[in-house]
Every structure is written in C-alpha cells, then in structure tokens.
Length: 218
Image (tube, rainbow, N blue to C red; front, top):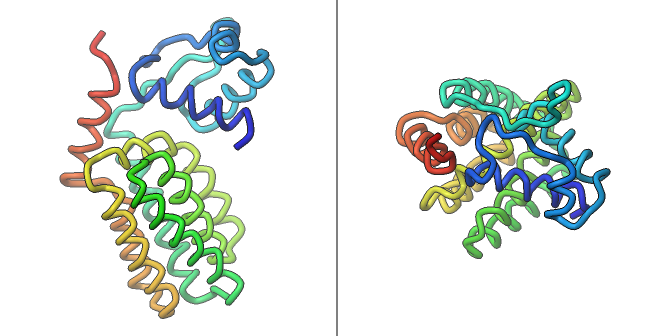
C-alpha cells in the first residue's frame, strides 16, 4: 500500500469515527505533522478524498469534510446496484477463462479476510472482488462508471462491513454471485448483485445508525 493510499485510509477512518466531523477544515500542515510526512502526500490524499466525495476543496478554506444525508447515500447505492447488476449480467455472458482466475482468487481472499474478523482487510479484498466482476463485463464505459461511483461510496461500504455479521453474509453473497456468473445465468447474477449492493430495510437502519454513531452531536 503506497503512502497516499495509507493516508487516505487514515483520514477517511478519522472522518467515519467522528474525529473530523462534517464541516471541519482539514489543515494540510496539521495533518502533515500528525502523520509525520510532508505536505505533498497530504495534498495528494486530500485530492483523492475530494474525488471520492469525502471532502470538498473550497477556495481559501482548503479541504472541508462533506456532509452526506442518509437519503442521498441510499440513492447512490441504488445507482451502484444497477450499474453492478448490469456488469454481472454482461460478465455471465462475456467472461473468459482469463476472467475466472481473478474472480475465484478474489473470492478465496475474501474468505480468508472474513475469517480474520478484520473489516478493513475484508474491504480491500471485497474491492478486488468487485473490480474483477467489472472487468469480466468487458464493457469499458460501464467499468469506468462503476469504478467512479465505487470510489465515492468507499467510506460507506467500509462502514457497512463493521455491522455485526455483515462480512459473513457478504462473502456468502459473493459465492452465489460467482456461481451464477460461471453458470452463465445473467439474470440471476444481476439479481444477486443488486440485492448485494442496495441498502434497504434493516441494512438502511444499520447504515443510518452507524453514521449517527460515527458523527458526534454538535
């Protein structure tokens, strides 16, 4: 993991746990001192977080932590679910033997991470799994859109994995998705991925609860 990615994760975790609440200005000098690095990797990390929607770069204020309403998040997850469902449907039709290897290897890595009980470790393997799914669609524009929205939802997808039993259920869903793709069952693969991504019912309540716990009351 390179320095910029590590810094992104550290700052992102601080945002999710409420250390930096919405509206907080993230000072480059202070962050550089805190993490023992120069301002350059801090600036790069903040730009990456801005691209993901976690912070907003404002004139004369610099990087400020953004506030995203739960309803907005649900809308974003709904769009992500449809994009990934399309990718899964295409992957079931278009995947080659070369696509099977990264899919099954990512699935195995997810299993090991889930057994470790480390939600952050699982998130990275989960990210690898979804990227292998996108690649198997062989639809470049769709892949670009999936990656773009996935970056914006990264902190919230990570947060969801901290909910009790979510890692185990996520891995089980991955297994079913891979089976549907390898069986060339596009409609089933699309439905399973849609259900895997979309946030509704109890999962919506869990996400809202997690967001409230992560953000201190002003």
